[in-house]
Length: 111
Image (cartoon, rainbow, N blue to C red; front, side, top):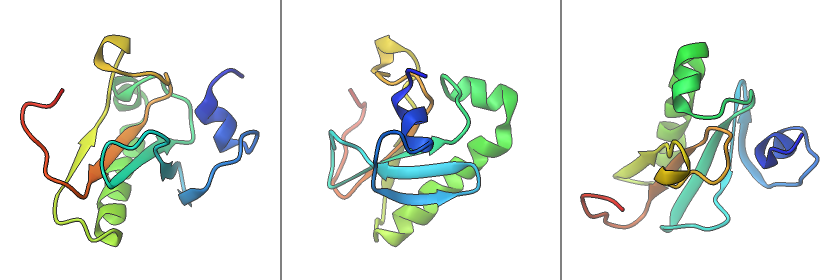
C-alpha cells in the first residue's frame, strides 16, 4: 500500500483525526491555505471525486454533509470546498479528498 491517506486510515501513519465516522475521516491539511483548511477523506480508496460519484454517490454526499458540520463547528459563515482531480489541477495525493477551506475572504477565480 503506497497511498498516504490509506495508511492514515488503517493507522500505519499517525494523524490527529478531527472526524472519524461511517465512511469518512477528516484532519487538518499539513499545508494550510487559510485559517481553516481541513481534508475530508473517504475511508475507501477512490482516485478522485468522479470515481466516487460513479461507484458510491452516497459517500460523496456524506463528504459534503461532513464539510457542512465541520464548517458550522468552526463557526465559519462561509467556506469553500474543493476537489482537485489530476496532477494538472493540483492533486498531489491520488486518494480523493475534499478540501474545506475558510476563515478568510477568497477571490474569484481561484488559482
